[in-house]
Image (cartoon, rainbow, N blue to C red; front, side, top):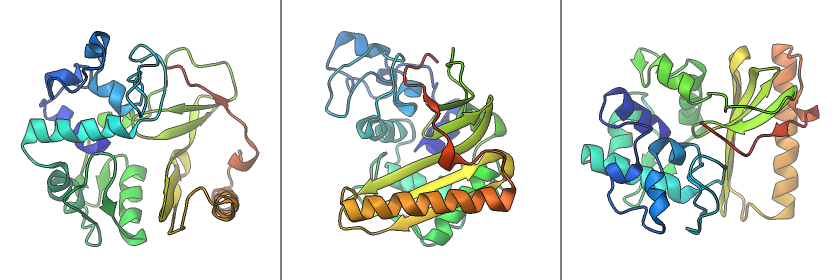
Amino acid sequence: TAIAILQLAEQGRLDLDAPVNNYVPGSIYYHPTWNQVTIRHLLTHTSGVTEGGARIAPPGSRFAYSNNGYRLLGRVVYSVTGLPVHKYFQEFIIRPMNMNHTDSGYRTDGAAGMWTSTTDLRKFLIMHLSHGKFMDQELIKESSYAQMFGTPAAPPQCEFIEYRGIAWRIWSARGRPLLVNHAALWYGMGGTMQWYPEYHLGWIFMSNPVSHNHPAFRAFYLRIRARLNTLAVAIADMKDNPNYIRPCYYQTVTW
């Protein structure tokens, strides 16, 4: 969804810093001040609106993960292009990358509903490692790619920092990106994509647990993630091992 929104911004069809109500009027209606919620706020989970719709902070001041924010972004894609979000994904992201084992259902929204394979997700990972390009296809420009990982204003004075960019969770080490990831864990499915930008290296984990909250799965997931980190450190001869880092978590964001 974030790639789709960035593509439309590149084409001048939407402004990341414009109110979302410009594109889907009336969608933010719980409180008048939410008219200030922008596309960028939704992309970075800083709308100030919780998953349940409660207002917890002024827009742009605090991170709170929200699938509903990304569902709303899916509606923005439809409003701007006239295409349901799953059809937009197919035409402008999936097919250009030859992701032949990826599909979506009719109820796909901006937050969930895609099916893929490790082979196809690998292509998506390569695109990110290549700063928005896959083979001869440019999905997003270098400038748009850089926006995804922009450092928040006034970060804490720590050697290691964790913060949220556009769509992704980011760890930085001494002001440089160390790793980028996103986990999707739910009933019947669990997966993570993680990469180390400066080492051009990444990994994918996919599974089908009965429940993402089951203690046995949680223990297994943490072990496999630690082992994959260790393997990446060994392959790339990294200075910093993520398994032994406890970054300062930067939750309050001012973009």
